[in-house]
Length: 300
Image (cartoon, rainbow, N blue to C red; front, side):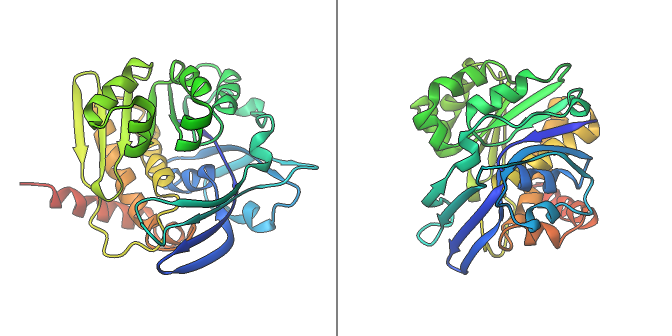
């Protein structure tokens, strides 16, 4: 089934205990698209400034990702983020963020993309997420991601968005920040009251949790031997999850649980290297093999 993603595309400067990388490819939509493309074709909608280097356009070359929705905006500058994980690999410290093009109007969704049935609104300004969602029709599943920046500064718009989507993906700190609840089960229930039918809470090295009505599912993280760069792990998790869901064309809870497991496995490749290198060095065959190992490890 058709899977569309909208979100940020940019350049990252990353610092971890394993080194520093400057001006590497980043952005929620990029990580999501690469991860989802292991399972299904992806339609990418996003915008970069006229300063965008060629490597951004080449990042998804050879993948089943349609980038005809990638807009190059004259007079604008590309989104940039500088983050550090030196103190804690589980939580990024933002050194500097230049929203640039993300502070402008939303990119246009091509007419050929407007019949997309599976939609992921990757992390970007909630007002832009709403604008892009409004131009789609016949959507079967809409899932969104968010971050602490929007919860702190744009919570009113974020709450409007929550009333228009089926699912929300966010991390444990963001869930607590949004709801004011320390207990994640209570936080998830409060998020559901805001509109979504299900919520997926990412817990870093402690895995993830799915809540939908009376159903709760807890999944551990893949036991990775080494974490080099956690940037994009959450977006890759969402990409693997949504890509698998679209490939199965089913929203049954058992399928959603398997989708989360695939998302977990894909994210385990992302964190193994800087930027997209971990994803670029794997394949669907390797992902399936690791999925089988992951499932076996949880059997008792």
